[in-house]
Length: 361
Ligand code: CXF
Ligand code: ZN
Image 1: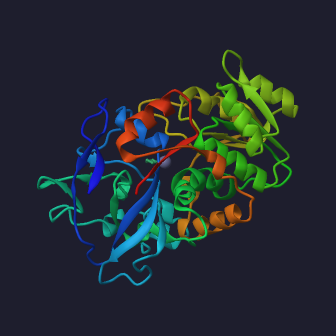
Image 2: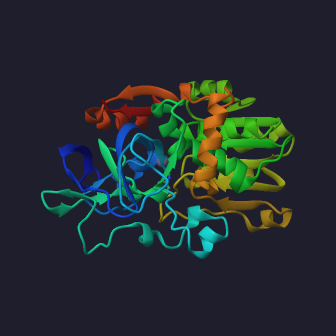
Image 3: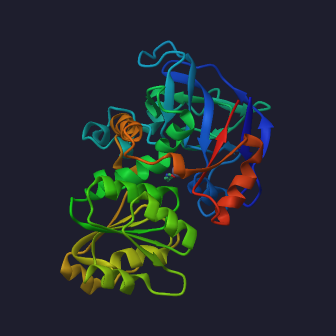
């Protein structure tokens, strides 16, 4: 099968013929139908975050089950499924406390590193990014990386729910628990930011302030539910937000992954407010906040995949979509083939697209 292979940071992915094994035990073989191109993969391609090579990146994919291992009972060939990188063992303290996104024993869902790898390239192990490896014609996953979805939703929309939507809506619903009537600011109007804006709308926020440097992204944010927009190129978004709200927001979300915007997300809070940093701030960067702001009970917190319990959350988000309450159609800006994956990253870097979805025949 064909897959986009990451060989070295700073180099384009190469689409190559690779080998994929048969499903063993609790594994499921999935024919990929759609794969969203997410900004997080770009962080690894650019070397901002390290990852073992060679690897198949991609983690926002949906498809149809082709075959299952002999210990799989919840999936069968023909099922429509969405993959999620928040793979859970189901037995550790975090999983059993209702926080499977923070699973402590992902190794229990992986193959023995000393044995045959799920993916290989000329006999050499090919790493599977975040246990998904979604930029490929087929995926071989542990069943706890999958959730079944109704065939009523097309798989190119469903794929987005696997990462961007789950992360954005989940950060609002699960991590921050936005209350109806509150005020919200969202920094960054890419896929995750627009999902957070939609989450804030669904949660009944009164004011939803979108912040971005691109005017066309702010225009999109309005269509997704933003009540106000702040163009942050060349001006201070914190004072603009303070002015709109009369003193700061109750909740802010940073969906970019930069020190400066993470700090702005904290400083634009009202007393008692909560800033949630969703974006991947590079490991070496420090987020600095002025200590005296803690005396007004402002909080700065992280999130991983929107604190999702994805087997519960993803089917709910599918329902929102089917009811017309969650706009996924407009989140897909472009469809491309696997061969065009590097062009998709270029368009992302240029700020041209919300999401490119790779579609497979
Ligand atoms: C990220 C979270 C950190 C690892 C890579 C993927 N989530 C979504 O893009
Ligand atoms: Zn992602």
